[in-house]
Length: 231
Image 1 (cartoon, rainbow, N blue to C red):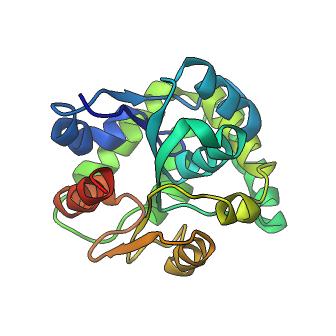
Image 2: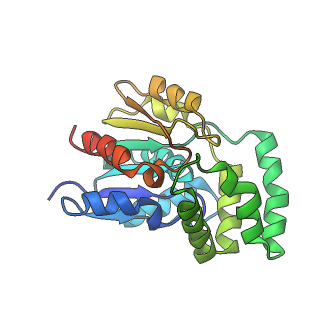
C-alpha cells in the first residue's frame, strides 16, 4: 500500500469536496480527510491534525485547507512526503478582507448562515458550467452540516493566519500548485507566486474551473494529482 493521502477541505466544506478524488485514489492508498472545525487559529488546527495524522503522509489542501497545509508543513516538515496546494493563498489576510469578515460573522451569529453562504460566498466559488447548480447545492449542504460555530472558528483562523512565504521557500518535497483558471477568490497570480517560491514545483492551471476544481473538473484534477502522487 502506498503512503497515506491527507486531504484538508476548504472553508465550510467536508470530505465531500474531495468525493471524486477519494473515489479515484482510495483503492491504492489510505485516504484521510481531516476536519478544520474545532479551533480558531491556523496554528492550533495544524497541531490538532498532526496529533492524529499518520507518521508520514502526502498532504493536499484546497483554499483554507491549503492555508492549514502550509502550517502543517511548517510545523512538521519531516512528516510530509509531498505537498499539493489547490486554489489557496500563502499570504496573511489583507486587513480589508479581515474587516469584512466581521459583519459576516455577526449575520451568522444572528442565524443567517445560509444567507451569507448564498449571497456573499457561493457566488465567488465557481465558473459557469452545466454542473454549477449541483455543486452549489453540495456547498450549501456541507455548510449546513458544519453549522455557525464552525463558520466563526474558521473566519477567526483566516483573519489571523500567518504569512507562509518563508515556509514555502523551504519546501523540498514534490509539490503541485493547482488552481482553476477562473478562480476569483484565489487568482492565478497567487499560484504563480507559490510556484516561484517552491523550487521544482509543478504548476497546473485548469480551464473551465473556478475555486473548486476538485468538483468542477474532477477528471483533469485527478490526472494532475495522480502525476504528483507518482513522482
